[in-house]
Length: 365
Image (cartoon, rainbow, N blue to C red; front, side, top):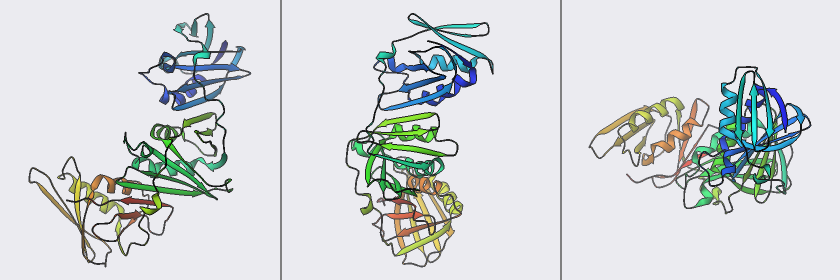
């Protein structure tokens, strides 16, 4: 293999795939990236066996071939070379030589045959969706995923296709976030898959720019083509909870508040909440919300804000972090918090918008 290209042409794909290249790995080849030179393209692939990222770039190929090299070392070399430098990569026996101007680096390599690549995913469904809309789905839901829960099916985000609707749902058992978007064309049937946490976070990182992405959903993998980057992730094998049962259907009481006023009051009060449980007590009365917190050191905080609320007086406890996460994901000035009673979950959303919903379970204080 022998290729030459500008530093920037090589740096961009390396940065795109490096998120899945493990520093500590069980297989030495997983610390490497796979370089494949064909035609006028160089593809760079990184994987941790759960998520695979492949990025392509235009280069001058003097000799086609493939090889794997230490990913982070090659990235650091590209980062530290002068801007617009011309770089050559040449495979020489068991080594890869990188040259740019008077700089020369000799890297160890492993055969490309040792690198685990996910070839076909046997897609059952292929849908096209705007990058901006898909990025919104992830941004509105990803924070509610569980982290290392024994209920492994909660450690990811569920993607569901139903007619012309693409829906993302995440829950950790204490709160739930849901977002949906309309597709230009209806998919072939309905399907539910769970994308693992790492895959969702990598997707969020690479989903820049405008345009469409092509999402291929198989029985064991999901694949997204985003410009010159191809993302592939294993799916979590498990049944996602019936989320529709968790979402309050028609809560009888609704409080409306300026989002920033509510968020700031919660942040202030939370300073003196229990550091472990993060509980705050919300008392709803006629057009007034009282927020209280206390901790084991006998410290207390109380704040009151004017809101729009004319329902029955109610007192309910919540984990303040869950409320703040939901408010941070709402990007309008006013927020509705709908309630049933002091023992039931609340529904947080933007007024009149059913495409994004957040459910927070109450806690005993």
